[in-house]
Amino acid sequence: MTDREDLVAALLNDSTNVFVLSGAGISTESGIPDFRGPQGLFTRFPEASRMFELDAYVGDPEVRRAAWRVRSQPDMWNAEPNAGHEAVARWEGAGRAVTVATQNIDGLHIRAGSSEVLELHGTFWESQCLSCEERRPIAETLDRVRAGDEDPMCLRCGGILKSATVSFGQMLDPDVMAAAANAAVECDLALVIGSSLTVQPAASLCAVAADSAPLVIINAEATPYDDLAEVTISTPIGQTLTRITSRLGLGAAAR
Ligand code: NAD
Image (tube, rainbow, N blue to C red; front, side):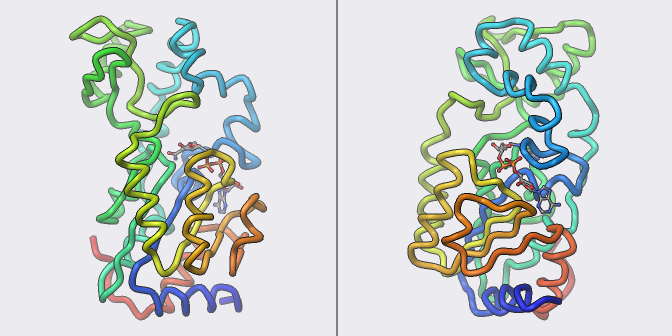
């Protein structure tokens, strides 16, 4: 236990309304690569970023076929919540509310038992039509891909299908963003966990929170918002959050 971890545990003990902004870094220990870390998808394959750009996805059938090939890989589907997600879920209760605004699309905070999760960038678990907006479990669409339909179209209107995630160039759901901004304003402690804080507008939520509450940033690499933080920690998230949580005197995980 380091002095910085002791300080974060003390801040958590004193808090009643916690805001967590999480990013891809909390899920790397579940085997899902991030985008910009040393082993990140964009670090290793810069060309992969086109799959996440709305214009390229809509305009180029080959980008869509490549995206569906990636979505059909099992890594994402087999991932389980790790010690980091579980620690965050355990902070709830005993007079402490925790709102998790996550940039992640993997659903792992919800599976770990966090009850208030705002998925800023949507979910990977559904597909959505870009024309009529019909949503279906993505498993149904992936069945079509695995049966040979390389670029499946909407069964209702024939529009282009995509995972129900927010691509670069696509609007965030204004209700979800407003709820996250409200949680950031109202919190008495904010923690950023596993984000490079380079994707807007999500990243700016930590600055909103830091206006009125202490900010803790737990991320392997420096972020553009480190100067606003009362504490920065760069050790691996799972072990770090497990040590901090062990200082909170909590019982069994609330799962
Ligand atoms: P990012 O890739 O830009 O940054 C992740 C950060 O986490 C990096 O700075 C990295 O050094 C750090 N990190 C990785 N593993 C860590 C660990 N074990 N301990 C400590 N730090 C660790 O991710 P971002 O800021 O979330 O933004 C990028 C976008 O990526 C988001 O829009 C999100 O939707 C998308 N994304 C999501 C997933 C997912 O759902 N799991 C995966 C990849 C990308």
